[in-house]
Image (tube, rainbow, N blue to C red; front, side, top):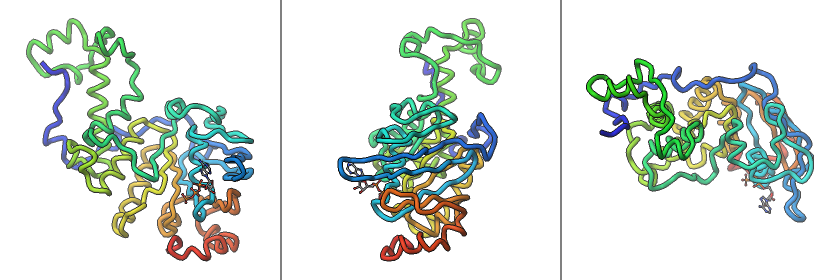
Amino acid sequence: MPEHEIVGAEELKDTSDHDKIAIETSGAVGEVLLEVDHVTLRFGGVVALNDVNFDIRRGEILGLIGPNGAGKTTCFNAMTGVYTPTEGTIRFKDQEIAGTKPHRINHLGIARTFQNIRLFPEMSALENVMVGCDARHKTSVLGVLFRAYRVRPSEGELPKSGIRRSFAKVFGISRHTLEERAGRRRSMELLRFVGIADRAHEVARNLPYGYQRRLEIARALATEPELICLDEPAAGFNPAEKEDLMGLIRRIRDLGHTVLVIEHDMKLVLGVTDRIVVLEFGQKIAEGTPEEVARNPKVIAAYLGEPDDAA
Ligand SMILES: Nc1ncnc2c1ncn2[C@@H]1O[C@H](COP(=O)(O)OP(=O)(O)OP(=O)(O)O)[C@@H](O)[C@H]1O
């Protein structure tokens, strides 16, 4: 008898229950969550980041903007363990993370999406998100193989009736099974949350572009990150899709996540962020509220000559 639950039509209704996917945060809104402390990063002779300094505060939506080649992606990569700063450091929840491996940083509570979508193309949308949920599971490989670690299920976790129910009552249910069921339910909830639950069982490579972008976000959210970094989430979106994305970014924050967003679309950045940090040629040239940044002469000068991006 399969231990997995089959997701039925009932679960495909677009009625995301935010309480089920909200995260528990370990600090107060407004306190410093991540600190980029005088970071310099060189690639040979290229100084991609030059003494960059800023904070991300818990509960905010922070925009990281700048013209092409300003150092935004390099900054993301330094925060998520892809690159180690040449000088300076990065702290997350007061812990130094510069030079820490990406999977460890993810475990500490930072997730990201990529400029170029990176999904498991042959897996379904639901499975892609379940991979993210798996990252939070406690069961070891041996525990999974032998289903050795059994726990006493709550009433809601027991099979509805029959011999399986009696068996589970006496012998318990393997922790792996319970974790997998919870992961599947949570993944489905996340697909509803980002608005793509109607195609949960389609392989990722067959999904329309906008669905793939949202799927990447759902997968990142599945790891329950306190900080989620979105790298150009609106790339390739039309105006209506950008409007929807702004709503989604706000709802992600409302779940308890802090959001960092790199984006070229100024209308979106100015419309959705609480604060903005501006880079140019690897240096921070401005920081402030969207209104402050929009009227900063250095920012205006940096964007002159890039009329397409400033559209
Ligand atoms: N792996 C690398 N090796 C060498 N130089 C690099 C590497 N990654 C980035 N750079 C250089 O560092 C600088 C900053 O690049 P980065 O990709 O961080 O900018 P960006 O602001 O994200 O630009 P875009 O908006 O075009 O994505 C650029 O001059 C780029 O050529």
